[in-house]
Length: 427
Image (cartoon, rainbow, N blue to C red; front, side, top):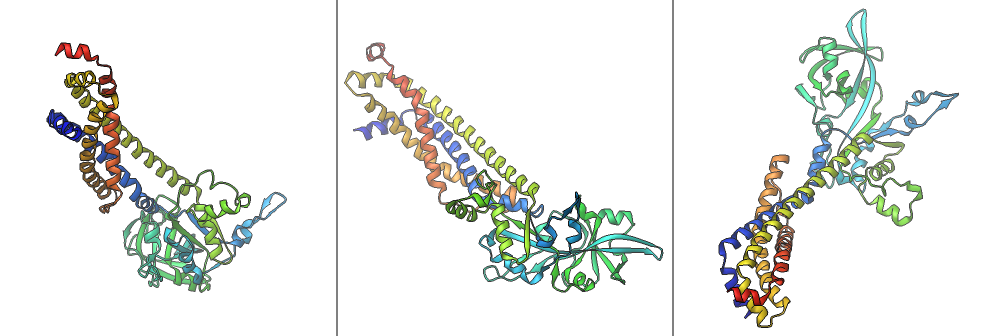
Protein backbone atom coordinates (compact mmCIF):
# COMPACT_ATOMS: atom_id res chain seq x y z
CA UNK A 1 0.00 0.00 0.00
CA UNK A 2 2.73 2.43 1.01
CA UNK A 3 4.76 1.52 -2.07
CA UNK A 4 1.77 2.29 -4.33
CA UNK A 5 1.22 5.65 -2.61
CA UNK A 6 4.94 6.48 -3.00
CA UNK A 7 4.87 5.56 -6.69
CA UNK A 8 1.81 7.66 -7.43
CA UNK A 9 3.06 10.62 -5.38
CA UNK A 10 6.44 10.51 -7.09
CA UNK A 11 4.88 10.44 -10.56
CA UNK A 12 2.76 13.42 -9.59
CA UNK A 13 4.81 16.60 -9.88
CA UNK A 14 7.39 14.83 -12.00
CA UNK A 15 9.00 18.05 -13.23
CA UNK A 16 9.64 19.32 -9.70
CA UNK A 17 11.07 15.98 -8.71
CA UNK A 18 13.55 16.14 -11.59
CA UNK A 19 14.62 19.62 -10.46
CA UNK A 20 15.05 18.37 -6.88
CA UNK A 21 17.07 15.34 -8.01
CA UNK A 22 19.25 17.65 -10.11
CA UNK A 23 19.88 19.92 -7.11
CA UNK A 24 20.74 16.90 -4.96
CA UNK A 25 23.06 15.49 -7.65
CA UNK A 26 24.87 18.84 -7.99
CA UNK A 27 25.32 19.17 -4.25
CA UNK A 28 26.46 15.59 -3.79
CA UNK A 29 28.64 15.70 -6.90
CA UNK A 30 30.54 18.84 -5.97
CA UNK A 31 30.95 17.73 -2.35
CA UNK A 32 32.12 14.26 -3.44
CA UNK A 33 34.48 15.73 -6.01
CA UNK A 34 36.12 17.99 -3.44
CA UNK A 35 36.27 15.06 -1.02
CA UNK A 36 38.08 12.95 -3.62
CA UNK A 37 40.54 15.76 -4.32
CA UNK A 38 41.20 16.27 -0.60
CA UNK A 39 41.71 12.54 0.04
CA UNK A 40 43.61 11.53 -3.08
CA UNK A 41 45.50 14.71 -3.88
CA UNK A 42 47.05 15.47 -0.50
CA UNK A 43 50.34 13.87 -1.53
CA UNK A 44 50.14 15.48 -4.97
CA UNK A 45 49.74 18.93 -3.42
CA UNK A 46 52.60 18.15 -1.08
CA UNK A 47 54.75 16.99 -3.99
CA UNK A 48 54.01 20.21 -5.84
CA UNK A 49 55.21 22.15 -2.80
CA UNK A 50 58.36 20.03 -2.70
CA UNK A 51 59.40 21.52 -6.03
CA UNK A 52 60.25 24.71 -4.17
CA UNK A 53 63.05 23.38 -2.02
CA UNK A 54 64.08 21.06 0.77
CA UNK A 55 62.57 21.14 4.26
CA UNK A 56 65.42 19.27 6.01
CA UNK A 57 69.19 19.82 6.12
CA UNK A 58 71.60 17.13 7.30
CA UNK A 59 74.96 18.42 8.62
CA UNK A 60 77.98 16.93 10.38
CA UNK A 61 77.59 17.08 14.15
CA UNK A 62 80.83 19.08 14.41
CA UNK A 63 79.26 21.90 12.40
CA UNK A 64 76.30 22.21 14.78
CA UNK A 65 78.15 22.26 18.12
CA UNK A 66 77.85 25.62 19.91
CA UNK A 67 81.09 27.21 21.06
CA UNK A 68 80.91 30.53 22.86
CA UNK A 69 83.73 32.00 24.96
CA UNK A 70 83.38 35.32 26.79
CA UNK A 71 80.34 36.16 24.68
CA UNK A 72 82.14 35.48 21.39
CA UNK A 73 80.73 32.78 19.07
CA UNK A 74 83.52 30.54 17.73
CA UNK A 75 81.19 27.95 16.15
CA UNK A 76 82.50 28.75 12.67
CA UNK A 77 85.93 27.47 13.68
CA UNK A 78 84.45 24.02 14.23
CA UNK A 79 82.88 23.83 10.76
CA UNK A 80 85.35 21.29 9.44
CA UNK A 81 83.34 18.07 9.69
CA UNK A 82 82.26 15.93 6.76
CA UNK A 83 79.71 13.24 6.00
CA UNK A 84 80.41 10.07 4.05
CA UNK A 85 78.83 9.96 0.58
CA UNK A 86 78.52 6.18 0.84
CA UNK A 87 75.90 6.62 3.59
CA UNK A 88 73.46 8.49 1.32
CA UNK A 89 71.41 5.37 0.34
CA UNK A 90 70.54 4.95 4.03
CA UNK A 91 68.24 7.96 3.68
CA UNK A 92 65.91 5.73 1.65
CA UNK A 93 66.10 2.91 4.20
CA UNK A 94 64.35 4.77 7.04
CA UNK A 95 60.80 4.06 8.19
CA UNK A 96 59.45 7.00 6.12
CA UNK A 97 61.62 6.27 3.06
CA UNK A 98 58.66 6.54 0.70
CA UNK A 99 57.95 10.05 1.99
CA UNK A 100 61.44 11.21 1.06
CA UNK A 101 61.02 12.31 -2.56
CA UNK A 102 64.58 13.50 -3.12
CA UNK A 103 67.86 14.59 -1.58
CA UNK A 104 70.93 16.51 -2.72
CA UNK A 105 74.46 16.18 -1.30
CA UNK A 106 76.61 19.30 -1.39
CA UNK A 107 80.32 20.01 -0.97
CA UNK A 108 80.91 23.80 -1.02
CA UNK A 109 84.29 25.46 -1.32
CA UNK A 110 85.57 29.02 -1.47
CA UNK A 111 87.57 29.47 -4.68
CA UNK A 112 88.98 32.39 -6.63
CA UNK A 113 87.50 33.42 -9.97
CA UNK A 114 90.44 34.59 -12.10
CA UNK A 115 89.36 37.53 -14.24
CA UNK A 116 92.92 38.69 -14.96
CA UNK A 117 96.38 38.01 -13.53
CA UNK A 118 95.82 40.79 -11.03
CA UNK A 119 92.08 40.43 -10.49
CA UNK A 120 90.79 37.50 -8.49
CA UNK A 121 87.31 37.44 -6.99
CA UNK A 122 86.26 35.02 -4.21
CA UNK A 123 83.22 32.90 -5.13
CA UNK A 124 81.56 29.74 -3.82
CA UNK A 125 81.83 26.54 -5.85
CA UNK A 126 79.40 23.78 -4.88
CA UNK A 127 79.82 20.17 -5.89
CA UNK A 128 76.49 18.38 -6.05
CA UNK A 129 74.26 15.88 -7.82
CA UNK A 130 72.13 17.13 -10.69
CA UNK A 131 70.21 14.06 -11.92
CA UNK A 132 71.67 10.98 -10.32
CA UNK A 133 70.29 7.45 -10.76
CA UNK A 134 70.24 5.65 -7.41
CA UNK A 135 68.69 2.18 -7.90
CA UNK A 136 67.08 0.90 -4.73
CA UNK A 137 65.53 -2.44 -3.88
CA UNK A 138 62.00 -1.03 -3.62
CA UNK A 139 62.53 1.78 -6.17
CA UNK A 140 64.87 0.52 -8.91
CA UNK A 141 64.21 3.60 -11.06
CA UNK A 142 64.75 6.18 -8.27
CA UNK A 143 66.55 9.36 -9.34
CA UNK A 144 67.51 12.34 -7.26
CA UNK A 145 69.52 15.55 -7.41
CA UNK A 146 68.94 19.26 -7.90
CA UNK A 147 66.64 18.72 -10.88
CA UNK A 148 64.23 16.78 -8.63
CA UNK A 149 64.49 18.79 -5.39
CA UNK A 150 64.63 22.37 -6.72
CA UNK A 151 62.87 22.00 -10.06
CA UNK A 152 61.61 25.59 -9.75
CA UNK A 153 65.06 26.82 -10.85
CA UNK A 154 65.01 28.63 -14.16
CA UNK A 155 67.95 27.48 -16.25
CA UNK A 156 69.12 29.30 -19.35
CA UNK A 157 71.19 26.78 -21.26
CA UNK A 158 71.55 23.19 -20.07
CA UNK A 159 71.70 21.25 -16.85
CA UNK A 160 75.07 19.63 -16.20
CA UNK A 161 75.43 15.88 -16.48
CA UNK A 162 76.75 14.23 -13.31
CA UNK A 163 79.62 12.74 -15.30
CA UNK A 164 80.75 16.13 -16.66
CA UNK A 165 84.40 16.88 -15.80
CA UNK A 166 85.03 20.60 -16.31
CA UNK A 167 81.58 22.15 -16.63
CA UNK A 168 79.72 24.51 -14.30
CA UNK A 169 76.37 26.21 -13.90
CA UNK A 170 76.59 29.82 -12.80
CA UNK A 171 74.17 31.94 -10.76
CA UNK A 172 72.48 34.74 -12.67
CA UNK A 173 73.66 37.54 -10.38
CA UNK A 174 77.25 36.27 -10.52
CA UNK A 175 77.12 36.07 -14.31
CA UNK A 176 75.81 39.64 -14.61
CA UNK A 177 78.43 40.99 -12.23
CA UNK A 178 81.34 39.56 -14.22
CA UNK A 179 79.67 39.69 -17.67
CA UNK A 180 79.70 35.93 -18.19
CA UNK A 181 77.31 33.97 -20.44
CA UNK A 182 76.46 30.41 -21.39
CA UNK A 183 79.25 28.99 -23.53
CA UNK A 184 82.00 31.10 -21.94
CA UNK A 185 84.91 29.56 -20.08
CA UNK A 186 86.20 30.72 -16.74
CA UNK A 187 89.31 30.04 -14.68
CA UNK A 188 89.19 29.06 -11.03
CA UNK A 189 92.01 28.83 -8.52
CA UNK A 190 91.46 25.85 -6.22
CA UNK A 191 94.07 24.65 -3.73
CA UNK A 192 96.87 26.45 -5.59
CA UNK A 193 95.72 24.86 -8.87
CA UNK A 194 94.20 26.67 -11.83
CA UNK A 195 91.33 24.94 -13.59
CA UNK A 196 89.19 26.04 -16.53
CA UNK A 197 85.48 25.33 -16.68
CA UNK A 198 82.86 25.70 -19.41
CA UNK A 199 79.60 27.44 -18.45
CA UNK A 200 76.74 25.15 -19.46
CA UNK A 201 73.81 26.89 -17.78
CA UNK A 202 72.78 30.12 -16.08
CA UNK A 203 70.65 29.71 -12.97
CA UNK A 204 67.92 32.11 -11.84
CA UNK A 205 66.36 31.43 -8.43
CA UNK A 206 65.92 34.77 -6.67
CA UNK A 207 68.02 33.41 -3.77
CA UNK A 208 71.58 32.91 -2.65
CA UNK A 209 72.15 30.39 -5.47
CA UNK A 210 72.51 33.29 -7.90
CA UNK A 211 75.85 34.10 -6.25
CA UNK A 212 77.26 30.58 -6.60
CA UNK A 213 78.82 28.14 -9.06
CA UNK A 214 77.68 24.51 -9.36
CA UNK A 215 79.75 21.59 -10.61
CA UNK A 216 79.62 17.80 -10.48
CA UNK A 217 80.29 16.42 -7.00
CA UNK A 218 83.13 14.01 -8.00
CA UNK A 219 84.98 16.88 -9.71
CA UNK A 220 84.88 19.11 -6.62
CA UNK A 221 85.81 16.19 -4.35
CA UNK A 222 88.86 15.54 -6.51
CA UNK A 223 89.91 19.21 -6.61
CA UNK A 224 89.57 19.55 -2.84
CA UNK A 225 91.24 16.19 -2.23
CA UNK A 226 88.16 15.01 -0.31
CA UNK A 227 87.13 11.79 -2.07
CA UNK A 228 83.76 10.45 -0.96
CA UNK A 229 83.13 13.41 1.37
CA UNK A 230 80.18 15.81 1.49
CA UNK A 231 79.38 18.78 3.68
CA UNK A 232 75.59 18.70 3.88
CA UNK A 233 72.50 17.04 2.46
CA UNK A 234 69.32 18.82 1.42
CA UNK A 235 66.32 16.50 1.93
CA UNK A 236 62.82 16.99 0.53
CA UNK A 237 60.20 14.96 2.42
CA UNK A 238 56.41 14.69 2.36
CA UNK A 239 55.23 15.59 5.86
CA UNK A 240 52.11 16.17 7.89
CA UNK A 241 51.60 19.68 9.29
CA UNK A 242 52.88 19.78 12.87
CA UNK A 243 50.21 20.20 15.56
CA UNK A 244 50.45 20.81 19.30
CA UNK A 245 51.14 17.11 19.90
CA UNK A 246 54.11 17.10 17.52
CA UNK A 247 55.61 20.17 19.19
CA UNK A 248 55.89 18.48 22.58
CA UNK A 249 59.43 17.77 23.79
CA UNK A 250 60.25 14.19 22.83
CA UNK A 251 61.87 13.47 26.19
CA UNK A 252 58.58 14.28 27.96
CA UNK A 253 56.48 11.87 25.88
CA UNK A 254 55.21 8.57 27.24
CA UNK A 255 56.09 5.37 25.39
CA UNK A 256 52.70 5.34 23.64
CA UNK A 257 52.98 9.02 22.68
CA UNK A 258 56.51 8.50 21.39
CA UNK A 259 55.42 5.55 19.20
CA UNK A 260 52.55 7.59 17.81
CA UNK A 261 54.86 10.55 17.10
CA UNK A 262 57.61 8.37 15.59
CA UNK A 263 55.11 6.60 13.29
CA UNK A 264 53.56 9.83 11.98
CA UNK A 265 55.31 11.69 9.14
CA UNK A 266 55.95 14.85 11.14
CA UNK A 267 59.00 16.72 9.89
CA UNK A 268 60.60 16.41 13.34
CA UNK A 269 60.08 12.62 13.35
CA UNK A 270 61.67 12.25 9.92
CA UNK A 271 64.54 14.48 11.09
CA UNK A 272 65.20 12.10 13.99
CA UNK A 273 65.18 9.07 11.70
CA UNK A 274 67.67 10.73 9.34
CA UNK A 275 69.94 11.46 12.30
CA UNK A 276 69.72 7.80 13.31
CA UNK A 277 70.43 6.57 9.78
CA UNK A 278 73.56 8.63 9.02
CA UNK A 279 76.49 8.28 11.43
CA UNK A 280 77.85 11.53 12.84
CA UNK A 281 74.98 13.59 11.44
CA UNK A 282 72.69 16.25 12.86
CA UNK A 283 69.44 17.23 11.17
CA UNK A 284 67.93 20.68 11.05
CA UNK A 285 64.39 21.51 10.02
CA UNK A 286 63.90 24.42 7.63
CA UNK A 287 61.03 25.84 9.69
CA UNK A 288 59.99 28.49 7.19
CA UNK A 289 59.46 25.83 4.51
CA UNK A 290 57.88 23.20 6.78
CA UNK A 291 55.49 25.62 8.49
CA UNK A 292 54.63 27.34 5.22
CA UNK A 293 53.71 24.01 3.63
CA UNK A 294 51.61 23.02 6.63
CA UNK A 295 49.76 26.34 6.66
CA UNK A 296 49.07 26.13 2.93
CA UNK A 297 47.77 22.57 3.18
CA UNK A 298 45.47 23.51 6.08
CA UNK A 299 44.13 26.54 4.20
CA UNK A 300 43.58 24.49 1.04
CA UNK A 301 41.67 21.82 2.98
CA UNK A 302 39.61 24.47 4.79
CA UNK A 303 38.78 26.19 1.49
CA UNK A 304 37.56 22.93 -0.07
CA UNK A 305 35.50 22.17 3.06
CA UNK A 306 33.86 25.62 3.02
CA UNK A 307 33.02 25.35 -0.69
CA UNK A 308 31.51 21.90 -0.15
CA UNK A 309 29.54 23.17 2.86
CA UNK A 310 28.18 26.12 0.87
CA UNK A 311 27.06 23.85 -1.99
CA UNK A 312 25.58 21.40 0.55
CA UNK A 313 23.47 24.15 2.17
CA UNK A 314 22.41 25.54 -1.21
CA UNK A 315 21.21 22.10 -2.30
CA UNK A 316 19.23 21.71 0.93
CA UNK A 317 17.48 25.03 0.22
CA UNK A 318 16.64 23.83 -3.29
CA UNK A 319 15.13 20.61 -1.97
CA UNK A 320 13.25 22.53 0.74
CA UNK A 321 11.69 24.79 -1.89
CA UNK A 322 10.60 21.83 -4.00
CA UNK A 323 9.22 19.84 -1.06
CA UNK A 324 7.38 22.87 0.30
CA UNK A 325 5.59 23.30 -3.02
CA UNK A 326 4.78 19.59 -3.06
CA UNK A 327 3.36 19.65 0.47
CA UNK A 328 1.21 22.71 -0.26
CA UNK A 329 -0.21 21.10 -3.40
CA UNK A 330 -1.01 17.90 -1.50
CA UNK A 331 -2.42 19.42 1.66
CA UNK A 332 -5.81 17.90 0.82
CA UNK A 333 -4.25 14.43 0.88
CA UNK A 334 -2.54 15.24 4.16
CA UNK A 335 -5.86 16.44 5.60
CA UNK A 336 -7.61 13.27 4.38
CA UNK A 337 -4.91 11.04 5.94
CA UNK A 338 -5.25 12.86 9.25
CA UNK A 339 -9.06 12.69 9.12
CA UNK A 340 -8.80 8.92 8.59
CA UNK A 341 -6.68 8.65 11.72
CA UNK A 342 -3.23 8.39 10.21
CA UNK A 343 -0.38 9.07 12.63
CA UNK A 344 2.21 11.75 12.00
CA UNK A 345 4.96 9.20 11.39
CA UNK A 346 2.78 7.49 8.78
CA UNK A 347 2.26 10.74 6.92
CA UNK A 348 5.96 11.58 7.26
CA UNK A 349 6.93 8.20 5.80
CA UNK A 350 5.20 9.10 2.52
CA UNK A 351 7.21 12.29 2.04
CA UNK A 352 10.44 10.91 3.53
CA UNK A 353 10.16 7.83 1.31
CA UNK A 354 9.83 10.15 -1.65
CA UNK A 355 12.87 12.13 -0.43
CA UNK A 356 14.82 8.88 0.03
CA UNK A 357 14.17 7.87 -3.57
CA UNK A 358 15.27 11.31 -4.79
CA UNK A 359 18.36 11.07 -2.58
CA UNK A 360 19.33 7.67 -3.99
CA UNK A 361 18.89 8.85 -7.58
CA UNK A 362 20.75 12.09 -6.85
CA UNK A 363 23.55 10.16 -5.11
CA UNK A 364 24.09 7.85 -8.08
CA UNK A 365 24.18 10.78 -10.47
CA UNK A 366 26.32 12.80 -8.04
CA UNK A 367 28.93 10.04 -7.84
CA UNK A 368 29.59 10.22 -11.58
CA UNK A 369 29.50 14.01 -11.54
CA UNK A 370 31.86 14.13 -8.57
CA UNK A 371 34.40 11.90 -10.32
CA UNK A 372 34.32 14.14 -13.39
CA UNK A 373 34.82 17.24 -11.21
CA UNK A 374 37.70 15.66 -9.29
CA UNK A 375 39.29 14.44 -12.52
CA UNK A 376 39.11 17.91 -14.08
CA UNK A 377 40.56 19.58 -10.97
CA UNK A 378 43.42 17.08 -10.94
CA UNK A 379 44.13 17.64 -14.64
CA UNK A 380 44.21 21.42 -14.22
CA UNK A 381 46.34 21.42 -11.05
CA UNK A 382 48.63 18.42 -11.47
CA UNK A 383 48.47 17.57 -15.18
CA UNK A 384 47.30 14.01 -14.44
CA UNK A 385 43.81 12.50 -14.05
CA UNK A 386 42.65 11.39 -10.63
CA UNK A 387 42.04 7.67 -10.20
CA UNK A 388 38.51 6.60 -9.27
CA UNK A 389 38.06 6.19 -5.53
CA UNK A 390 35.65 3.36 -4.55
CA UNK A 391 34.59 5.40 -1.52
CA UNK A 392 33.08 8.02 -3.83
CA UNK A 393 29.84 6.06 -4.35
CA UNK A 394 28.88 5.54 -0.67
CA UNK A 395 29.99 9.09 0.17
CA UNK A 396 27.89 10.55 -2.66
CA UNK A 397 24.84 8.50 -1.68
CA UNK A 398 25.12 9.43 2.00
CA UNK A 399 25.54 13.14 1.19
CA UNK A 400 22.61 13.03 -1.25
CA UNK A 401 20.32 11.33 1.28
CA UNK A 402 21.31 13.89 3.94
CA UNK A 403 20.48 16.72 1.53
CA UNK A 404 17.11 15.15 0.69
CA UNK A 405 16.17 14.42 4.31
CA UNK A 406 17.30 17.75 5.75
CA UNK A 407 15.56 19.55 2.90
CA UNK A 408 12.30 17.80 3.85
CA UNK A 409 12.29 18.77 7.54
CA UNK A 410 10.69 22.24 7.25
CA UNK A 411 8.01 21.18 4.70
CA UNK A 412 7.00 18.28 6.98
CA UNK A 413 6.72 20.60 9.97
CA UNK A 414 4.43 22.73 7.87
CA UNK A 415 2.35 19.68 6.88
CA UNK A 416 1.80 18.77 10.55
CA UNK A 417 0.23 22.19 11.16
CA UNK A 418 -2.56 21.66 8.63
CA UNK A 419 -6.02 21.55 10.25
CA UNK A 420 -7.77 18.57 8.59
CA UNK A 421 -11.27 20.10 9.02
CA UNK A 422 -10.26 23.41 7.36
CA UNK A 423 -8.28 21.59 4.67
CA UNK A 424 -11.14 19.23 3.72
CA UNK A 425 -13.72 22.00 3.91
CA UNK A 426 -11.72 24.10 1.43
CA UNK A 427 -11.66 21.10 -0.93
